[in-house]
Image (tube, rainbow, N blue to C red):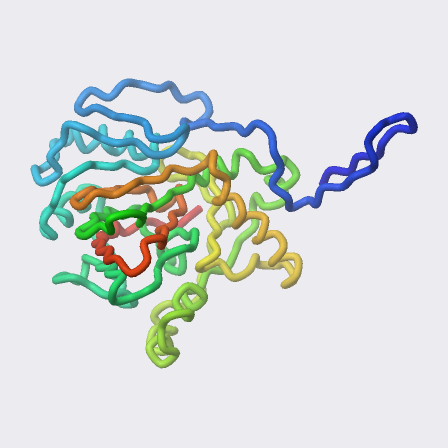
Length: 310
């Protein structure tokens, strides 16, 4: 909260800025953990797309098996840039799954439509007019949310249909100190119902209530590989903060949800058919932009099983 009480001779009147307001001014845009040293990449060309998040990787054919050295360098790039883009790969479903498996077992999601394999989720805008226009982190309603995801656009509208990602480490870094102190150590409840109830029949959702009971995660999680602190709440699945009254919880969550909307923490990707995006689901939120009217947009996603947030 900022309150300005004008001195007697000041030309300005008194004013007040609410505590949960995002205000103008410089932001800390730190891509690497404090003390980390930036190193060049030797096995591919990396082209940054924004200050702290998003990089295009050039010079690789993802249909080919990865060497251990290449897999390790891509992992470093993912940890440092949080979202990696690969133009014009046109992977088969099998090759897309094989690429994702370099980082762990693949996740299935019975709530979503699949494409030829339980591990491949298909988003066809002509069939399901949803899953868009909201900032979220995937499947935080699981005890072990996804580590990451590999998304390929099969069909792209003539204009629009971009996807945006937000850096939740930068979002945490730029919170006021008193807010960081307040939320460190807090836990929040995540539930699949808020994210799916808007467009799924209640009788279908009821069948999954025992499969996906509400879970608790830390409001601020640490990245298991870099150690960075990151905001880990999202408007699709986080319902309340444990131990707070409803009004206090709602107000604090509104402030935290707002952080994904800050442009300085974001990257935006304009798709072409066959492009791949590989993102760290632990460190980001994303937003599929539905601005393409009645045109068709078809995407297929493979998710990598993750760990329990801490």
